[in-house]
Length: 117
Image (cartoon, rainbow, N blue to C red; front, side):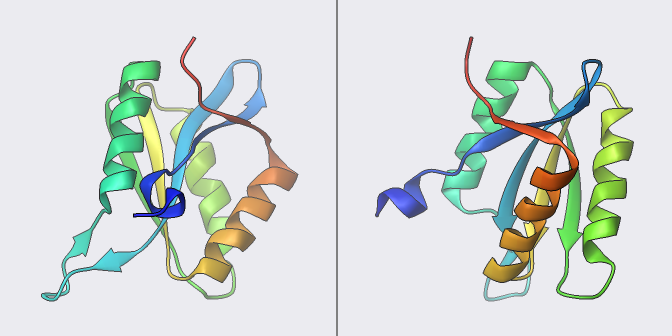
């Protein structure tokens, strides 16, 4: 495997000092039976996020390539900021959608890489 498929970064999205939430962005992938599956690299980053943050809840948001998807993703992130112990997993329909999502989040929040203390 290449480094691109072995590693997926986790991030913090911060709206203010007291309002922040960790999140991960991945593609929406399905197996041969149409069941959504996470790549091993995403499973590892989620496990690492739990270890670093102590958060164990998972809020999954599907980001489709449709008008209004980014606004809906922003509302989902805002809701998650009000929940204790939550990690947000954005599952994007396409690479382009994941890039649009990251650009949107970068413009709306202060983003930083998730790192162990």
